[in-house]
Image (cartoon, rainbow, N blue to C red; front, top):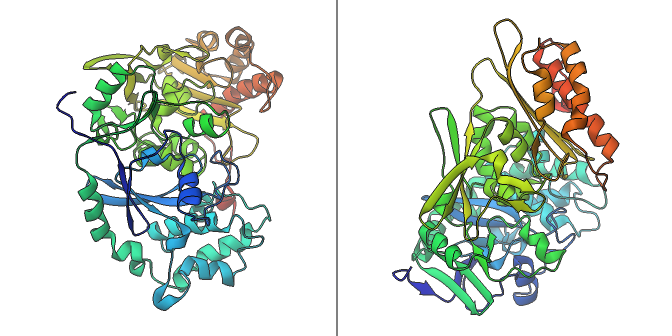
Length: 493
């Protein structure tokens, strides 16, 4: 677009310092920038894939007029995504009158640090939680720390420290709280509506001015790598050494962050993160709440996007199976042209999606379950939290007045080369009485729908057994009763 202004530097704030970078590689991570360029080595590299949390920092960004700080993984966050942001590292923490910060002092007093390698990451995750919830419940503490691993098994001491942080100071007097209005003003001043272009030839980094500019860039650069949350693209760089140039960073585009409901359909912009989607989806489709709470750790949920989880076409992505079961649709855009298709038709084969060169996912349209229907989604992993799916089943059932199956949609991840409906199983149940006998008789149909693979996460036999058992579980849960199928330890207590 000829009328779009350009500049050749990324502008952000690091702790209290204004930064203007005119040289940055498309694949330069925030972690490398902090440690190698700025000698801020409190931020550690542990896993380089967003799993361990040793690299946790806070990134503040404007959402409308509101300044929001979130914990993120610096090891898979790229410098190109920081335009207009405030990066806060462990070195920026300080308490009143020269004392330790309340989070740090609590960690000291409750012996929350052992070898110390993971400690800065834990402190930053607890800092983000404390800013949101000065008196957090244990469940909130554990959820905030899902993405932080302690090699010395010091979790109980860390949880005790988390409970006590407000005894050492008030969150309202923290510098990030006191300076929030002035920092928001500084970040707003960085928003000049310009496109950022750094580098030349193939080694280029682009930050679009707005959504239309992004569409124009991608139409002219159809082989460019789109980087939204970078929870996948980050690993392409750190683990697979892939060249992602030229890279187009879109995480700042407000037009892709809208989420609304209209006529019983939730419309989710492709750039909406898991954290941003959680409130509405868990309220309107309650079964999605527990599922979203198990996607990565807090840092990953703060970065990863709904559109990215779909667009990468992974057979073990967590959102496609439940969205397919609900009958979701997908709007794709190329230039000024849009088309909307059923989500299930987007996935063609492993690594192949119905996306034309220069086309991108713009919006996901998810119907809210109708009254008196049944919907559930179940995720199978080796460990409960912060683990990649071995198999994921989603079920959406409506019964006729006589108790027979009027409609049923069943979709799985981890069972085929793409997220896939179990159409043979659906047909075996359709029109039948919704009963244990009907469910058991439909189990043989799984062999017609799926031929799962054996890999490091599960064997083919385990996946098939688990898939069948999830249908049994879904049936059991539709029967009501006072005994829950699953009880959290908080409910048990």
